[in-house]
Length: 144
Image (tube, rainbow, N blue to C red; front, side):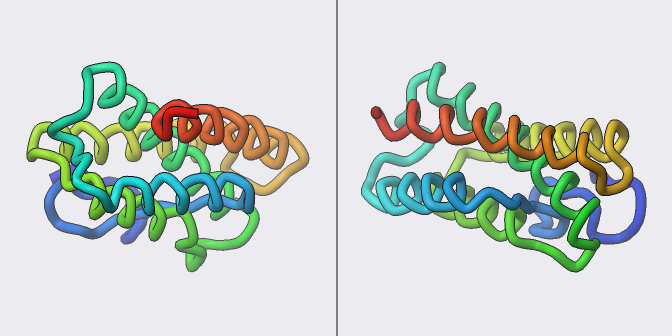
C-alpha cells in the first residue's frame, strides 16, 4: 500500500482512497472533454504505448496540481482528485496501468507538496505551468 503523510494525501493503488485536485478551469474543461470522448469503447488497454505514457504524464500533472491547489485552498479541496477518479473510470485501465497511473499521481503530488508546502506566488505560477502541461497532454490524447 502506498501511503505517507496525513490521511487523504496519497492515492493508494486499488483502494480508491487518496488525493486528486487542480485549479485551472480550462484544464478541467479539457479533461471533461477527454473523459467524455473516452466514454466510447476506446479503453486504456487499446491505447498505444505513447498514449499510455501520456496518461501517466497526465496523472503526474494532476498529482502536482492537487498538491498545489491544496496548498492554497486547504486539504478539503478535492476538485482534481475527483477528475482523476473520473479519468480512471473512463479509461478502465488494466491493473498494471492503473497502478502506474496512481503511482504517477502520488509522485507528482509528493514533488509539488515538497517544493511548495504553502500557498505563494511561486506556487500559483507552478500551478499555471502544470495547467498548461495538462492542457497539452489532454489535447494530444484527444487527437487535437
